[in-house]
Every structure is written in C-alpha cells, then in structure tokens.
Image (tube, rainbow, N blue to C red; front, side, top):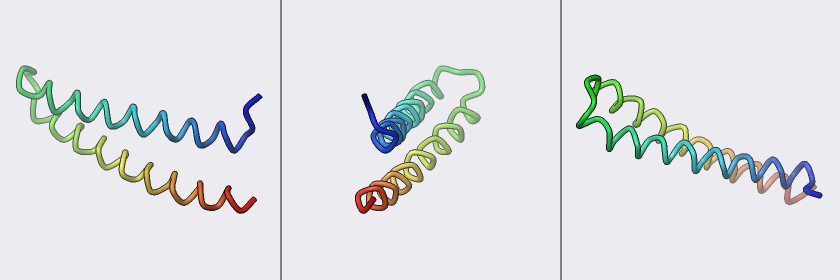
Length: 67
C-alpha cells in the first residue's frame, strides 16, 4: 500500500510529465493547426506549469523528507 506522502509525490511526478508532454504536443501541432498561435501560447503556458510543478515537487519532497 502506498502512503499519502508517496502518492502525493507520485501524483506530482505524473502531473509534471503530462504537462511537459502536452506542451511538447502543442508546440509540434501549432504548424498544422488552424489556431496555431493559440497552441503556441498554450504550450508555453504548459511548460511554465511544468516548471512550477518541478519547484513545488522539490519543496514538498524536502518537507516530507523531514516528517
């Protein structure tokens, strides 16, 4: 059974991977889509979310390590 701490870190990791993948997909699809500029900004925003989640995951990992 996975603990709450382990599940939280797992969920953050999956969220980081998903948002990075979505940002990559948006950047690759912007050339063929009708609304390419929207996908460009959406991909950039997704990369920012990935970076924010990385920072959050690092801080939570350090905090949970001491518990």
